[in-house]
Image (cartoon, rainbow, N blue to C red; front, side, top):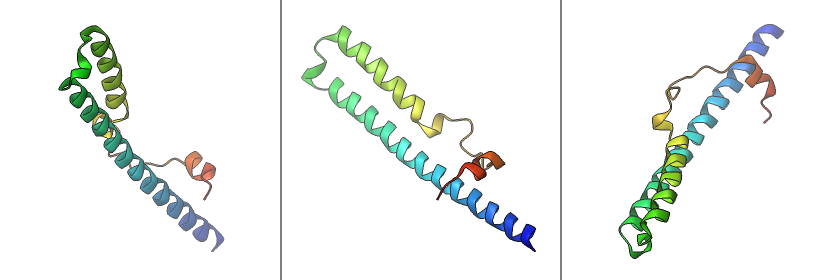
Length: 91
């Protein structure tokens, strides 16, 4: 009986971790889009007059957008939550 209750609690925690990952993906996707929008807005404004500095900044900014964008993550659909994550999870 206790083992069944423990398994049920572990699965509940796994589902909570998966949900938090989903929320994090949403936040990161939104942030990546906002970074790209900012870059495009600056590119279309007078602020990008210093082409060399702007291009260096643009490359840097877009690299960060790509890094956090969940649509570029090969593991996006991974629902696996290992035991370590469950045991380390604190509510």
